[in-house]
Length: 95
Image (tube, rainbow, N blue to C red; front, top):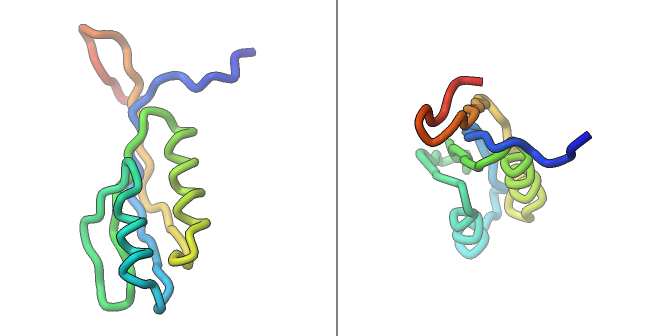
């Protein structure tokens, strides 16, 4: 059995709850995470984000790294979508 992940396009929508004492430096370190895009932030330190990666495993690693940051209380996944790459001609398809 091959343990390699097959190439897919993985997009996750999530809400990140930051700690109330999150510093600007900690926040800036979070926003520089590869594959992370922040769409909204509210007064209660919640961020609406999307995470993108080539494989499901990679996006799970991103989520784990974010969860383990000192500035983060929790990350809630609300949407998870995978596309499978067929070939150069057909491109990505729903999985």
